[in-house]
Length: 458
Image (cartoon, rainbow, N blue to C red; front, side, top):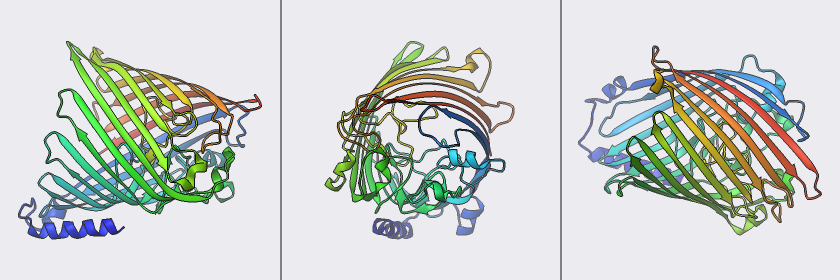
């Protein structure tokens, strides 16, 4: 938090010496501010089947109704302020549905997700307070009803030509529901809206948050070479307290230490007559202090992807990710970090980053505006994965256990052209996971999930 206080002090000093401003008075800055919002109605239906050890809640549906409402003031001597409020209700959800979706959609209530003071001078922008963050290693997940948020400070600078340099410090985290925080067991379901707390999701280390003592990151994006984008970021979470709750995978751990995260990526686009070829390569890695050695999270993930786009409305990709044999590769902080082989609904944190996992993804997209249906797009994907059994238990896999995974997804998105701001998304995923134990006993999980989301932005 010291970093946040120092940043705020620096902003105030700089602001007093700045001569550039948009509004004539502070009152005008607030009067000329802009309000934006989204009315949301999301319906989800999910069925889990198999001898996977699930509870009574495995064939359920839930409807969320709510709003995301934001305000950003006009600039005054380079300063601006912003607020975003999120609210959700699940009026028809039964108890078992709330339990099935308790870490994703069951949050009921409101939260002030953004409340920040920002200052811009030249090509430097500083923001202090609650805010949405989207970077490769620190990122909230926007695919659940409550979008994740962070409390801290962010700074970005574009003085170097064709280069963005940025840094973040986060001290608190707001998850997707009130049940993502440690201490919520089957006996203590809350179904509450999330709140800001000194715990954070470690992407790839399970669905619940861990206590921590702040995290920081440094990153850069460079586009100085034609058609090539280079990205790199480093992040560290301090004093992450991993508890014995992850002992379900054969671990006994109640330790605290730092966790570092690494990210590099190169994206190359080759224009070819009337379409584009795309080539991507990405590395992610995690390293923990010695106190967390038993968790086996010093893993590496390599991702490769190639494809084409804008070919008469068609696009397609083939992607591959591989993870080191005996260590999970943690992907970052928050549920937002992704990888090339994610399946539409069940993303990279479900299996892609597990130790010894090799995953392939084949995807295709089509823009129906090419045949006269403006606003309609589609996406299809097929994923297959195979996991080698790790020699020691990790935070996701028991020693000697291996898995085989297959999944399909289909998504239709429609931006209604006659009512600006109204969008609908229909997504269907079928996902099969087969786990073989060290004693060659096979357990299976089959998941079928349908999402129907309606949003109206204003």
